[in-house]
Length: 116
Length: 115
Image 1 (cartoon, one colour):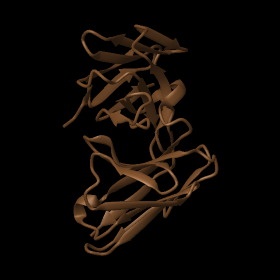
Image 2 (spheres, one colour):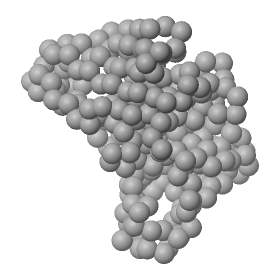
Image 3 (cartoon, chains in turn blue, yellow):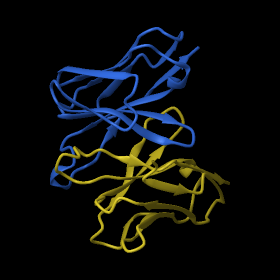
Image 4 (cartoon, helix red, strand yellow):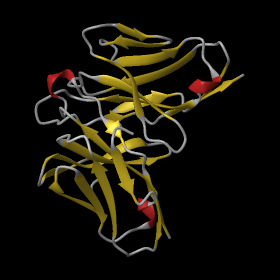
């Protein structure tokens, strides 16, 4: 999985609790993304980062926040988990962020989150 | 708002047959169209991609056909094999600028190839 690890790989939590998912890369890629995958919706972008401390919202960012203090780590926080946030979360990285014709994103193995 | 629509949701093909998955997009600023393959329990992986300056791209048994005027593109898997059984996602993005390579995905197609 292109030097990308996600932790935890599985998590069960209760409604209302905060949850933080971690994405760690060893590729030194500048661009990092968080997606959620749900049946019938494909993958939807939550937040992305275009550099250390540079982040922006994706299409489904409500209820989520992110932080990136180091190139290699991108954290996704569910501020107060809800059942609608039960999903599989994928982190992805990109070297060029769409420039230079090299838009390939490499995905991590995913985190399966269940909110009860 | 789903900017990339993918069909069918599921597809069953016999070994040796042709699998065809279709996608349509709305945003005319999209200029990069990748297909991702995902096996159970794994993250998606890039399979093949195309830019709108060509109408077709072939890599082994996998071919993308692209129709810019219709805003449609499709994946053809020739001589489908049981090992091709996976979920396939089409996607689109705007290269460069402030898009930062953000991908918009279709809903996914679960392909099953029977031996």
